[in-house]
Length: 105
Image (cartoon, rainbow, N blue to C red; front, side, top):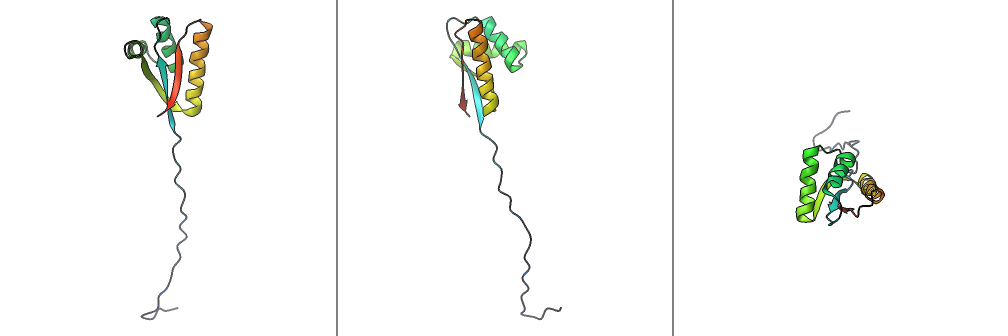
């Protein structure tokens, strides 16, 4: 088939548009200061549950102590929820009033 001048050939391209997948929202896990939980316990929690080295754990613990709150990590909803539950359970078992929360980033 030959095209003549003035003829328009329409070509349909088979391009599929994929909806852009959005990244799931992330959540900050926060430790709150209290006047009763020993600093050593907070360091232990940070090392054990958040895989921090000793220096990182001390730095975060001191931030909590001085500012009253600190972000200890940013995770997907499910992981953040699990981390909060683990902190609260460990604190409860050791009879410390340490509080841990999460909020959307």
